[in-house]
Image 1 (cartoon, rainbow, N blue to C red):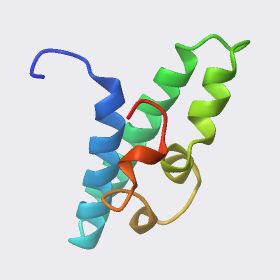
Image 2 (cartoon, helix red, strand yellow; image 1 turned 90 degrees about the horizontal axis):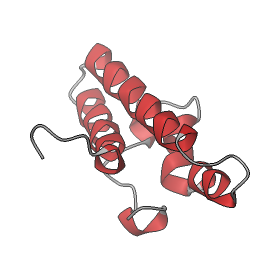
Image 3 (cartoon, one colour; image 1 turned 135 degrees about the horizontal axis):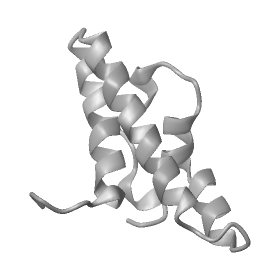
Image 4 (cartoon, rainbow, N blue to C red; image 1 turned 120 degrees about the horizontal axis):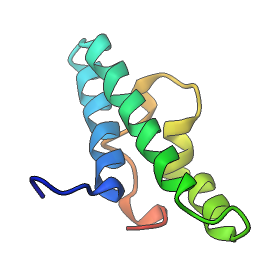
Length: 88
């Protein structure tokens, strides 16, 4: 994956890193990873046609919604069910 953009994996990796960093007490790093995860999600969503239901389906998927809501970092990440969202 080195040298290639893989946003479908990147947002999940950053969400998981945010969760792990928060559990380790590294709150600044956790926030940075969460911000990167959110930015990647929005980049993906914005690449989809707004008229198509795919964008809405993606943004409302449980794993994606947990990253986008303004919640403690601990509620996001490693425990996400990988089969519960679009693009798995």
